[in-house]
Length: 67
Image (cartoon, rainbow, N blue to C red; front, top):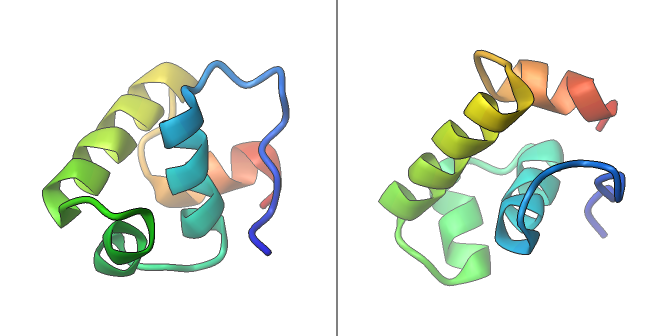
C-alpha cells in the first residue's frame, strides 16, 4: 500500500495517486503502467506537482510529505 498524501495538500486526486507511487520508489514507466496512462502523462503530472509544491524534483516532493 503506497503512503498517504496529507489532505491539506493542494494536489488533484490523480496527482496524489502519482505521488503515492513515486513515494513507493516507482519509476515514471512503472507509475504509468499502474495508473493506466502514458509515461509522458506521468512526467506532466510530476511537472505540475513540482510547480504546485514549489520543489525542484521528486526527492524534494517526497521529502515535503516525508514519504
